[in-house]
Image (cartoon, rainbow, N blue to C red; front, side, top):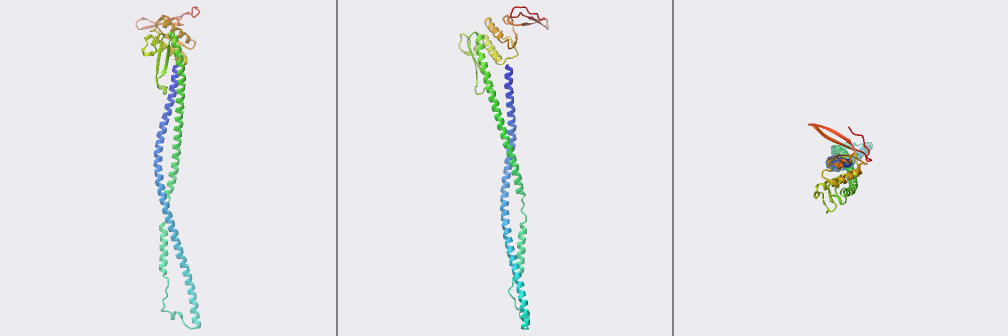
Length: 346
């Protein structure tokens, strides 16, 4: 039925609108994620720069520490060597003093009391050692929190990037679904329109006893939104727009199009309201013949004042007003197609 076809197109349009709404929501979420990703990317870049600077400082400080430790180890090694040398010298001095006392009966300390040897400035050496130790302590521990924070931000950025990619994939899938739905809707519409067009031409010839009529899409590239143009050529006339036809011709053309839709999508019943009012007897007769062809697929309720149209009815219902403001229904069941009387309807 025409209503079913319209409903099907409406359902497809609703699904397209829902898909577009989901895309809009996905795009909004994607926009927020993009902003957060940009901010995190900038923050990560800043932290990377700080990390590089910290690593450079760490390398410098580590190098300085290694250098200072090397210098300290060198000084301590020299100090130990000097202490060992002093110890050995003291042993030798004590041995010499003993030999001098035993062999020469001379006290070395008395002979060289006024002698001042050139000794190392051990206090300066100790001061240098303490200074080097102080430099190492002042270097302290390097704060690595910035590097840890950078790693956490990089993980967060990776997570958001994954979400962004998921949203982009969802958007792509929704766009693909919309495209498929639109393609399917357009193809179904074209197929249905082609059937209606063929039926319209056939029914037009039956209703007019000849002639030709066409329906065309105003915009073949936008079949779901565009309108249609109707061109009719009744017998003996030139093709022209429906707007230029007479009242009866317009009615017959409209009936042909309406019945073409019903023939493509049959309806359980059809209600026609005085569609035969502008028809002459010949057109009315052709109209009745076409209606009879549809009786096997659909029931018709026709409001009419035409006796010819009434003659094809199975049951007539008349509405009278015998009293002011009071309507009364009168029903009459006509004879069947074999001429046999049928029981009356109360």
